[in-house]
Amino acid sequence: QVLDTRSGTQDLQVDASGYSVTRLEAMERFFFDVGSDNSGEENAEFIIQGLPETTILSVFNDPADLNIPAYDRLVELYAGVTVPGEFVFNNVNPALALANMQITFEVK
Image (tube, rainbow, N blue to C red; front, side, top):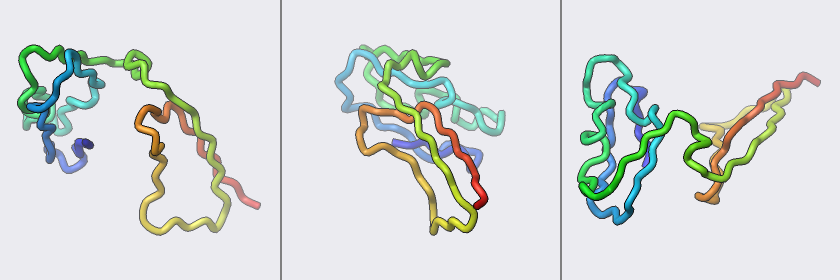
């Protein structure tokens, strides 16, 4: 699930009550207080609801610590390119994460 904090408040929580894992790993920015107003974005119990007491919540600063296989993407966009809607880079393999992206804007 994706947490959207762009609106200034956390608009989605994760229901972890059915999770049967010994460890749940997350990045620190997952708990970022967008408005510095303690509105819930930094509260792990608010965001991850129903996490079993036996599950260890491990929070990391460096994505490399999550040990998720990653790849790099090089993109060239040429003058006149128009993308309707959104332009998303989201690998269909859930076991891979985009680590680095380099976008070059080209003029021909």
